[in-house]
Structures are given as C-alpha cells and as structure tokens.
Amino acid sequence: MHVSPNPATARGQQISITGDCGGGTGLKTVLGGLPDHPALVDIHILDPDPAHYRATARVSDQIGSGVGPVLVDCGGEAGVTLLVTRF
Image (cartoon, rainbow, N blue to C red; front, side, top):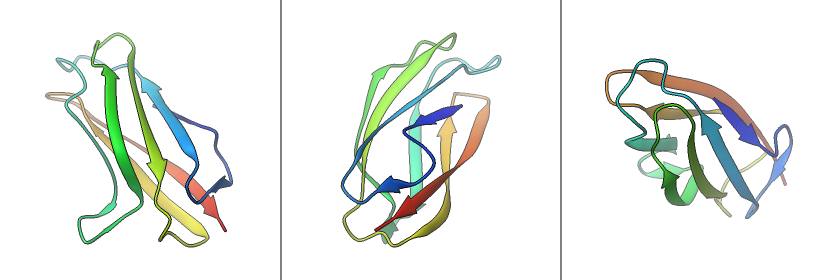
C-alpha cells in the first residue's frame, strides 16, 4: 500500500491511497485513526480493483503532528502503512 503525499502530510490535505490486495477480493474499507478521533475523513473508494485499488481521503483538521497507521481491508487480506502528519 502507498499513501501519497507522505511523509509530512498537513492537516486538511487530500491524500491518495493505492495498492494491490495480494489475493484479497477488492478494497472494502480504508481506516485511519480511532473511531472517536479519525485521522482520515471524507474517505472515498474510487476503484476497488484488487489488482490496483485507489482511494482518496482528507487528513483531519483535528490531527496533530505525529505518526499513525492507515489500514485497508481487502476482503480476506489487510494492509497497513504509516502516515506522518504535521501542523
């Protein structure tokens, strides 16, 4: 999985999430942060194709500087990468 731009993504910035599902059935969900404190908002799956999925999201205006996981559910496979955020 790849998140772009990364590292040092700013609050409110639009990001792209791309990758392949490695045997999964297709992109089902993208998560960032905790349910009560999401790091990613306005998440949209543009193409769930298991060979090359694409999604977009916006970094929450409430997020601080730091590092946190971005997770994907690919229907039987999961992926994770780290997103570095800054003010």
